[in-house]
Image (cartoon, rainbow, N blue to C red; front, side):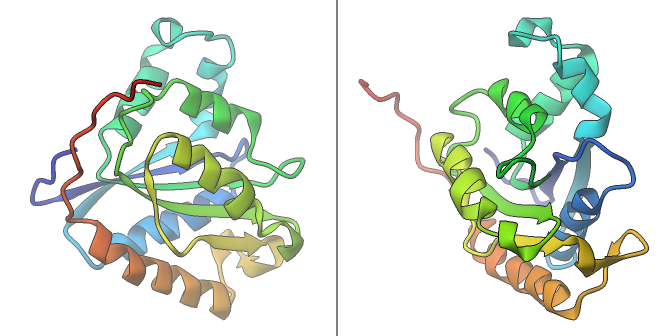
Amino acid sequence: MTHPERLRIVAVSGSLHRPSSTTALVAALAEAVASRVDADIELIELVDVGPQLAGALDRAALAPDAERAVLSIEEADLLVVGSPVYRASFTGLFKHLFDFVDQHALTDVPVLLAATGGSHRHALTIEHQLRPLFAFFQALTLPVGVFAASEDFEGGQVRCPEILARIESAADRALPYLHRLPAPVRPAAW
């Protein structure tokens, strides 16, 4: 991971629908960070690349757009990832997308986690599902995750003052992690 003058923020929405509250949330998070640093944002929506992933069993079988999405994820300076909660976890295609990411590509990459669901009772999905997934990659999951329920959106945008404040807090708390150089990756013996 190199850090050019402009950071490369890649926002990934695990939603299978459009319009999507998950997409609105990850976009709001990415924009909040970008308002604080010089950054470019790329938004990857699973609703677009998901159909190209469904039949692929290995990376060589990915369609060009899906391969570009995986490469963008691997080359990000900051990932903002979110998924709707589906059966107490992230969506299956969201996981399938990350199954194609090289296991060492995200080492020390900061990852801002987000999730959406029908009620706030699903908020621990960030801690129990998303954080362990990115721990596998040895990514640096940032301290503040953001969960928003259906009631927190209006007109396709986050409107709840508490969620908007949490987005701002997550962006503020991300800043110290954005310019650190990663430690060298050494393959483990096991």
